[in-house]
Image (cartoon, rainbow, N blue to C red; front, side, top):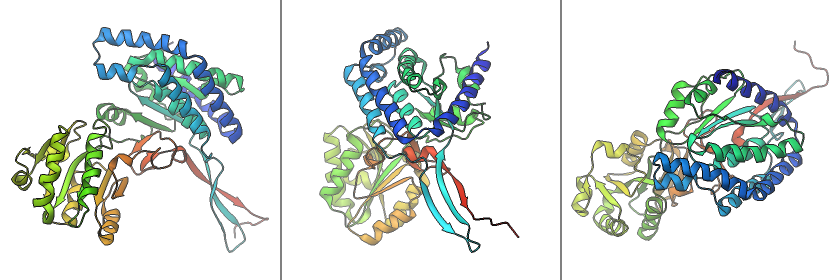
Length: 418
């Protein structure tokens, strides 16, 4: 059987399994996730043995130490996966929720009710924990899921899926509700992206090159974000202590993530006093600064910024810094160079805060808080499947609710249309 035929069969079986998943009650889904969590822990040794195969292959391929660390499973990380499943089980189930209800003049009662999307395909890179996390979110929201992880983690991903699948079978749920593409060839991804008859949504998780490849080749709607060019604007009346804390946290805590701070904008009225202070703090923390002429006047250690710096997602200890005339120029800069991900303002001016929220066109906008809060768990979603910088059908961190859609429900007592 060819790869194309195998992928089509996986997708067709997942479509049938989605029908069964949509019928499950919240207690049934929660019990399934809790059983899966226990099974992961019980199979810790087996998982680590399979993971060791990936690690040994990665060393032969010459993967970096950072990549090998992302690949590695140990007892603590397996326990964290299991805890993640338990956390999803504890979340409210969005399926069946009636979000609105109204009565028409003819007496019809009309509402909108949340339902699963159906079949979700997730394409991701070398983090085995995504296999468990994504499966939990998709299953809890009543969907079936097809997972295609990076070839570097194929033994780990298949082992995790096999353990979780055993609990599906024990619960009498079709195993195709959770599938992992079992071969590493890129042809499998391309064929998966053609299955619009069976797959309702594709979610890629990984670097910009992976996401662009998926978008360029998919016949199925794709939830995506290419990169996170996140900004902080320090307004004229900002509290300097607060601003410094927010900037340092955004840039330094985890510079390699998509909600890390990449560009700092400073109001011209405070540039002379604030820029030397923040530049000194960041330089001590080994952050390389790239600034415009005004910034370099007050922070001579800064390199000269180029046009490319305003577009850059560095994902390392580099920060672009620019002085702006006012809020209008800050908003214009963000809307021109930003990636619709996350932006923050530090200000004591309520009017400016409200304007910033209204006028900045990004999926998460913060007032007096770090960009690092652009995360489903931190925003109270419990967990996230990813972050969307597209506006259809979700914008920002995606939790359980974002893996559902709505349908109209109508109650009548014999009405007919005239």
